[in-house]
Length: 427
Image (cartoon, rainbow, N blue to C red; front, top):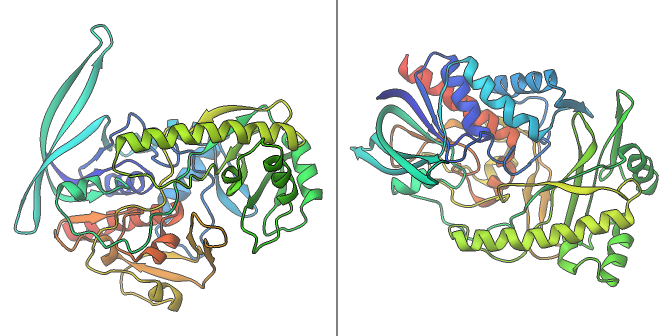
């Protein structure tokens, strides 16, 4: 079977690209290795979509998603940021959005081979794994497909690796990974009233009441180069062996849209160095994270008003990986490009999200605010193949610039920009 576009990976960037391709009338196939869509948004419980400026471009899919989530009571606009979603409801909404534009989506996909010639990808072969519950056996169906253009939105760039693409050198250690979770049966109003009076720093702690329901965010890290109101509580918990010292290296929580008794945790952040390509290491990372989650949940029960009877209701299916492989594209975007606000003829992204690079060491993480910047479409094009685009955190950028561009708002724009560019190429 032949398609105009085949997209590998149904996460943030992949769903945006697939929707826009199909909406523009392109024959589109989206291949996803899991049995659900959303990638980090759903499988890794990464909410909210962080605000990335008021002049963003290629936002049609994001705005549609916010509207659709609002219809199912899974979205709020918090401090002018419309990207506060319920990740559980999002799992159901994404397939319905793609279905409306007749996107062909296949799940449980494992790509095992690709045919190429003269800097062109001709076809790919993939396996679809079906489980027969009656016989408790897996049936594997292999299929070859052809396409005019291919898009790697797999995050870890597993598809590009099969193609033997050139990757950029990693000069630094990969940032630490995380495993997010949700606690439920929280008295959000009680906690909001307490945290608002406990921490007056609005750069760290914010509270807003929407339809008489309290929504909030707050944070703490073990870095000593910044004042944290929550520091005495974490210090006491470590002293009493309720937390390990490393458990408190990074802590951040958010309310969940339309879910007044649940709170999303952007932690624990794991400090061990794991091999991101090793199945065994990834299992070990999850096990380490789950033990940390138990301790953090107990800490919240004991120290936070409103959390007395709360419990862990969800642990993410996916580990949160901030950076791994990065493609060598037709243009390698640099931190100097970002800091200077360099302009491009064909921008795919406009953002002002800060350079956010996590470190395992105290006082070594980077959170650098800059002005508005653009990412060119050429940074989403493989240097090895003329019909391969790469979107998401594996874009062609140096390590510091990637730390600003890996966020969901920019990934939505990357997917949409590539869809529109491919449509022009085929017109």
